[in-house]
Length: 189
Ligand SMILES: CC(C)(COP(=O)(O)OP(=O)(O)OC[C@H]1O[C@@H](n2cnc3c(N)ncnc32)[C@H](O)[C@@H]1OP(=O)(O)O)[C@@H](O)C(=O)NCCC(=O)NCCS
Image (cartoon, rainbow, N blue to C red; front, side, top):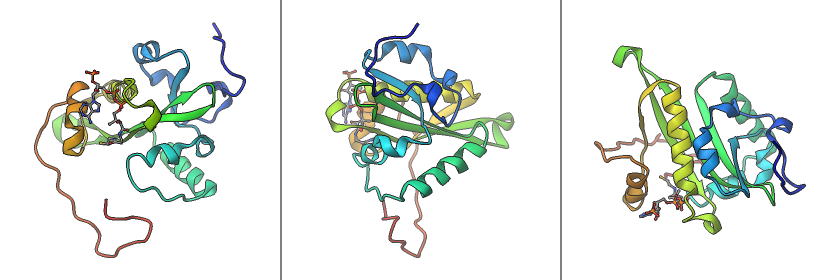
């Protein structure tokens, strides 16, 4: 049944989505406030503040609409691999939260799969309202539904308590090696 929403709100049926919205947990959908909607990233989300929301997480350079959409297309052609989801404020039709899970296929663990959670960000005005938790729950459910035997992520020390609240535990260390040629659009982050 249709719910009353602002005329600004673009329904999923009018959008070109990154993946099947049915993969998003109904439990998470039910737990969201009525003025918010969770769905896969859409090809037109460049216009819905996707990059602005990511800027609460790190330095963001704007690639422009055409390059953004090429990246979207490149992600979508790899089946069952890239899942970026967004939370939309229905009154403005703008993104207020984002997150992604990338599915890695392995030769180990009986040809197992691992989900890598990346790029979690909630708009500053919406933080502290359990949206981060809902994003992690939805991504973890996708990862598990895809058959991943574990879901992992990297984070700063400051965010460890947040991920613990989401049911994650500290395990091992992260190592990184940056490419020797610095590129202007990829600061060392
Ligand atoms: C980290 C972030 C995603 C959390 O999202 P959020 O919507 O504000 O968090 P939630 O409201 O879902 O928090 C869920 C629980 O974690 C707790 N929590 C959230 N961030 C926390 C932190 N940094 N330290 C301690 N606890 C934290 C909340 O208090 C809440 O606890 P409760 O269930 O006892 O009330 C958000 O603050 C954010 O976008 N930060 C900037 C970008 C960033 O650091 N992203 C993570 C990259 S690894």
